[in-house]
Length: 419
Ligand code: UD1
Image 1 (tube, rainbow, N blue to C red):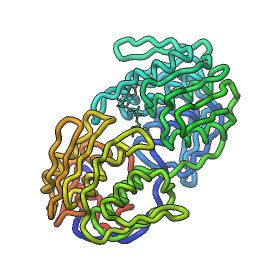
Image 2: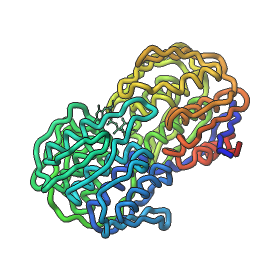
Image 3: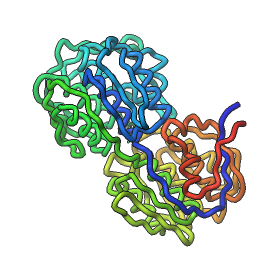
Image 4: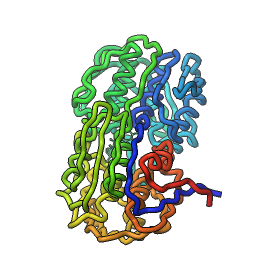
């Protein structure tokens, strides 16, 4: 028996949801806990399969971790291993963020490549280059990485691309290095600001996250802390797009609307009414949506690649044609064929997708192809006539605590079923 999502579309939404903690924020923070040799309490930690995968890595390393009153507690005092086995590495791409942290703590790390993923090749050359510049010796033996660092040394390094993961790995290694590190062309994502907040609460000295230049004064002895994770801006974008697709209204709490500005600008241009609120954001959609100017994904503060699929889902029934340009990943239109099954009119050519709005969509038997693409199918199904089912929901569970629970709270007809 496998779990599927069952959705009956065509119903307007009305409701409120408190948005879960951010997956992309908490994963590097869980890696960062190994720098502390202490107990860290991670509040608002989302319960996701990717978080469970991080917990399995922590336990393998000799740490303990448990859930307590909705928080994840990690005790890294007795960490005594520096290797991550291949099966744990393959479970989740972000496992590579443990590299900088393990190296900083123990002076050695052994792990395999996280491998490609459903979005196309995901190289880690920038991660490795940054760690080498900090003094790590890294040997690549057939996909198995042996890393040694007698003592990491702070330096000035420039990332060729503002990679989120490479920036995080560099920060974690720099916290354990002697002296000052300056990371130029750093990624500016809000999740990196949350990592900085966590590290500084543990006694580290990190400044500049959120800008392109991050400075780290390494070598401090870190202690544990209690940290509350930021709200998940991509989950929030998903629910905004769900309300835009289905019509009606939704209120989201627990997210910072400023982090959603490109998504809300697109939805406003399409005809939604959006209000910022002290603790969140509210959306209302009455008439039919309109097509919008080209949506080009870009590193933050540009339009997030992770919100491309859900925005596309919201615009399937808009008036006119919208062009999407995916600039971050090579293979990020895998949801398109599934949307076409519902009657969508989408043409893809390389990195460009053109969505011509149709009058109506019909429910269909669908398969989630990846995390955000899977969530986008649920968004599309909300605006389709009749019933849809979505299989391969394990992709969706990597990043959404309980998509059916949250969309139900917003008034959608959606259930998990066993098939
Ligand atoms: C993170 C997010 C992911 C999001 C992505 C882009 C997490 C856990 N994941 O992934 O949800 O979609 O940012 O916003 O935070 N690149 C290289 N060499 C490298 C590293 C990256 O060429 O060593 C390229 C990638 O192929 C990609 C681009 O840089 O084209 C951006 O990737 P990156 O920012 O590193 O994404 P992730 O950190 O993997």
